[in-house]
Amino acid sequence: MKQKETLLNTPLAKEPIDDQDDHMAGSADTPLRADAFEMDDQLKIELIEKHFREIMQILGLDLNDDSLKGTPKRVAKMYVKEVFSGLNPKNKPTPTLFDNKYKYDQMLVEKDITFYSHCEHHFVPIYGKAHVAYFSSGKVIGLSKINRIVQYFAKRPQVQERLTVQIATELQKVLKTKDVGVVLDATHLCVSSRGVSDTNSMTGTAFFDGKFKDQTIKNEFLNYINSNTEIR
Image (tube, rainbow, N blue to C red; front, side, top):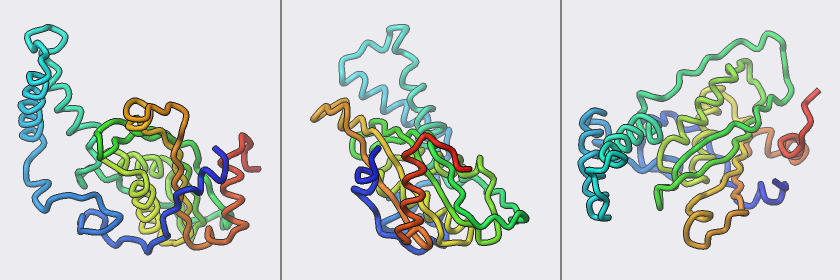
C-alpha cells in the first residue's frame, strides 16, 4: 500500500491507558456493559446457540438437514471461544519482557502480522496486516507477544481506528515507552461483499507517538513496511 493510503486515517496519539481491562467508557475502549463477564462461557454458548437457531428458522432454513442441524452450536462456540474471545480480559496475553542487554537503540519492527477481526456494524470479517515498531526504553518484548497482543484486540467486534489505538496503547503500557508506531492495512467485507461491493479498496490506519512523531523516523518505518527488503 502507498504511504499516502497508510496515512489517510491517523488517530491522534494518546497517553497509555492505565488499565485496559477496566473497560471504562472512552474512545479507545470497546463498548461493553458493566456485567459483561458475569455470565460464564458455557451459558453464553447455550444462549447464543438458542438464538442463532431462531435466526436460521426465521430465514426459512431446515434445521433437520444433516448439514445445518449442528450450525447453531458451531456458531455459538466460534463466537465465544474464537472470533470474539478478545472480549474477555481473562484471555489477555501476559507479556514476556527481557532486559535490553544488547543496548539496541534502533527501531525494532515487526511487520505483516496477519489479523482477523469483525466489523461491529455488520458482524462480517475484517482482515489484514498489522505493522508494529518501537524503540526500547530498557526492555524488549518477546516477538510472539506482539502478535498475541494484535490478535487479542482483533478478536472482538471492532472498528479499525479503535483497533489501531488499542494495540498501540497496550504496547506503550507494556513497554513503558511512548515510542511506538502502529500501521494497519485491512480489507473490510462490509465494503467488498455487500453494499458498494468494492473488492479492490483497502483501509489504512496509523498511530505514531514519541519518536515516531519525527518525520524522518516515521518515514523510515513507512518505507520499510512498504518495501520487500529486510533491515540490515
